[in-house]
Structure formats: structure tokens, C-alpha cells
Image (cartoon, one colour):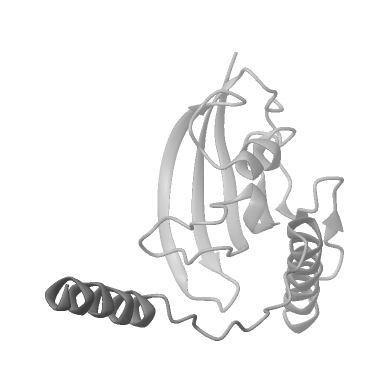
Amino acid sequence: MGLKAGVIGMAVLLSGCAERAEPTVEVPQMNAVERNRMYLAQEREMLKNYIDTHELIGIVRDGYGMYSLSMVPGRGMSAEMGDEVIYQATVYLLDDSGIGQYTDTVELGYSQIDIGLHEAISGMKEGEKKLVLIPSFLARGLAGDLDKVPPQSPLRYDLRLIQVNR
């Protein structure tokens, strides 16, 4: 009986130690929708500050939250969704650090490029050069590109539409 009582006592002692409750600290939880609204408002403010500090007179905001400024008018065919286009892009973060420069051929509306880029190129004319500010949700999104573009980064594109093929 003594051994059995000792084992039970030891089990109670050990289980009592294991069940020690950690003090709970209540962290106020923000509604996910409200958190996203706050972030979008901050990002809009970042884009406005970029426009002001770079004195981008005449830049226009579209219904998607992107800003564009035509730098050189085009003279050729206008790009439409479904067209194959050849374009050149130079990409920057809003701190003006360069991400890269490239030339690409894509089918507007169907290729694997940033959603905002499809919209920015659509309507451009061959030969046109345009500066476009694209919010993060239309650029590389929440994760960035896991390389040069940090998470939730709006981007500046300097675009030139080279050719439109229908």
C-alpha cells in the first residue's frame, strides 16, 4: 500500500506541474477587413507622397487605384485585351531603388504578369512611354517576389509599348 500511495502521489505532483497555467495576456484582435482597410489607406498615402515629392504633375488615378502619366505619346495601334504585345519595363520600388529592366512579349489579359501591368498596357499606343504607379495588391501582392520586391510593396513602372499584334 505504501508503494502504491507513493506512485499516486508522485503522479499527482508531476501532473500538477505539467498543468500549470501560463498567465494569459489578452491581445486585442483587429478585424481582418479593418486591418486591410488601414493598410490600403496607408499605401494610398505612400503613393500620394511619392507623386508630391517627385512633382508628377498631370498624373491620373484610375478606378483600380493605379496612377499613370503619359510621358511620350504613341502613334501606332492601341493595345487591347487579347492582343499580343511587346513592351519594355523598368521597375522601381517607391524608394527609387531599381528592381530591374526587361523586354517581354505577353498576351494581354492572359499572361502571367502583374494584374496591374495588364491594365496599364491596355489602351497604350505603339511607341507610347508611360509612368505607372501600381499598388501592391495589383503588383506583387502580399508576399512580394521573395527576391527584390518586399512584401506589400507598391511599384513604379516606366513602360514603353513596342509592338501590338492582333
